[in-house]
Image (cartoon, rainbow, N blue to C red; front, side):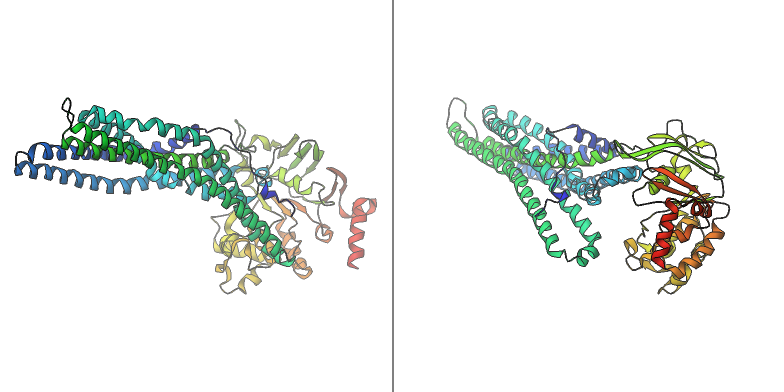
Length: 594
């Protein structure tokens, strides 16, 4: 089977970058007071539970030999209070660590989404949308447990270890040193698997990204898939991607599962040694160990390895999280190439004079789409742009909206260089209808109001009537309140274009851009729509990209663009009299229609 683009993995970082985790901790700052309260409460609870083995030791070595039931009851009561305090603290910790963790997840996801809103078209041109989506949803969700419990548990477990080791030394130095002999072995295991485990989770995150991207594309293109009977071939591609993901997952968790058993084996070995040598030293007359000391110490040993095991689990989670964080922060750090200049000012109210001065642009270095294009459109004029596919027509209007940065030249509106004004103030005064008539999930009313949130229902209806969308909308079951799915799957292509057209008109722009606005509208509707457009375009500067030349005959000026330059410019009558490229294009359409 031919190689699919989703088989290609992203470049991986070679080394474990702890800076990613430190950066994640920056999201903890707004919640540090609540976090500290949880940490202090858990530390106090841990300190209190550390006294329980001491109570047992007192009972075994003092109270029982002295048959002092009063002291037995006293120490038993203290043990109960310590356990109760620990349980209450644990409940408080679970509640508030989850609140903190989920809030950080929200903040992180919001930062990604907000940054994605600012990234230019070029970012989305080069990436499957499924690979972007997996970072916002799956990768961030994977950090939930780490943030909700891992950080607080790690801090409290580290402090617990300090308390435990302190009490162990106070109880018996020899047994403590024996217990600590297992730590170098554990360190050797960590060093051995660290790089391999990090690499394995990086690969797994890539495979997950590939799978998610292919699923998203397959769902979006399901009509094409079924039309060309590609179901079986697509299933084979999915099967390969899914198997690759499963294999990478199993390889990654293999390292995760290595840590836990390693801790268990080392803890069992040291505990066994403590029992053997502890019992031997009980009968050593030179430095005997009491039964109470041995019982207390074995209790501390079990407590010692429990946080070590938890810390090992946190380390596993951290390695997994770092692999995801690399991709999350890579997205957040993606430079916004199209942004306001440092000294940008608000765009004054637009009248509509537009000038292109020696404008050049390339999507790829060395391949110019536009080459030193110059023209001027006066306020209120309608400029039609025609030419073959790939000539640069859509690029012209995209540059006017500052969706891309210019390579050379200037674009002026009313004498103001648009590179020096804020993007928001520029686009807020322009209306754009793209080639792709995107319909959002929601009501028809909401979709038309998308470009002007303050518009009244009457304004929405008026715009729909102007573009001849009102009649078909009223035929829907709930009229303007009819719910439509994402991309408007319930609507025809022509209906989606009419709704998108009404959306652009409702914004009441001074400059209106129509990119193939009538390409999917039938001839009868087009005639009615043209009358409404003629009234609407009065007083506005408009740029109309059209392949159907019958729709732009009345334009103030028609530009024929090819190979990145303006070959011809004039009115319909002037260009027809010229007998050049526009004449040949128009006659070919006329003859085909005839």
